Amino acid sequence: MKYIRIIPGTLFLFIFSLSLHAVEASQERPISADMGAVLEAKLNIPSPSATPSPEARKTVPFQVGERLKYSVGWGKVLDAGTAVMEVEEILDYQVHDVYRVVVEAKSNAVFSLFYRVRDTLESLIDVNGLFSRRYWTKQDEAYKKRERKYEFEQEDNVAYYKGKEYYIRYGIQDEVSAVFYVRTLDLQVGKPVYVDIFARGKNWQVKCEVPGTETLEVPAGKFETIIVEPELRFDGVMKKGKVRVWFTHDEHRIPVQVRSKIAIGSILIRLEDYRLGIDAAGGE
Image (cartoon, rainbow, N blue to C red):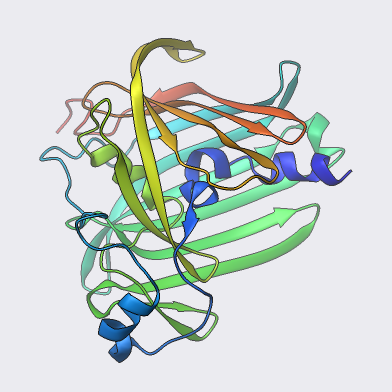
């Protein structure tokens, strides 16, 4: 039952968590914020030229009201569950305007017989900087419940997690905000992009190759897409080099499909239905 447990537990991770395809860039240990200048070298975090500071396109591709619904399949025969991601509102968080993004993932009735999943994730994404201000998860898996919360003081290069302080680079992303950040980038075939992520008490860097474009049909319709491949440098449950994400090749950059090899087959996530945000849809 080991791998059966893994499948629904990663319903949202393949589409919303680039950190699973990352290169570890630090060791897990709490540090003081005033040591940042020294620790940046000790932690071997890439230089700014290797990992650019957050630079968004002039037009943000998502707006309040955007709602994306996905089906999650295991192999060719098993429908494991669904995941929904929505930009719910803009609110004031500690004197910063932030997008409140909520992700909900759940296993379907059949898969719940093996392993029930009811997970909720919330990311507060800075409207101006397009980086994370707070990340909170509430997981209910196999009737076991747990919560995690990261607070990011971006200007002070500090993350707070379980009462400890961790050094972060300015502009760090969480597991959900990373996807929205990639959507803002000027993706070009043959030109990799980089994302810094803080997850599970560690700093990570993700290199994403952009190998090409493709016309793709999913339940939500037919789309012209641009392909992004997060770099995985180690084998485990997910196989090295076997992850692909298809974003619409337009101003919205909607993730419409994710395919990944795992130890006992493959995961396929496809866009079932979507609603654009108010501004993106041409509303007021």
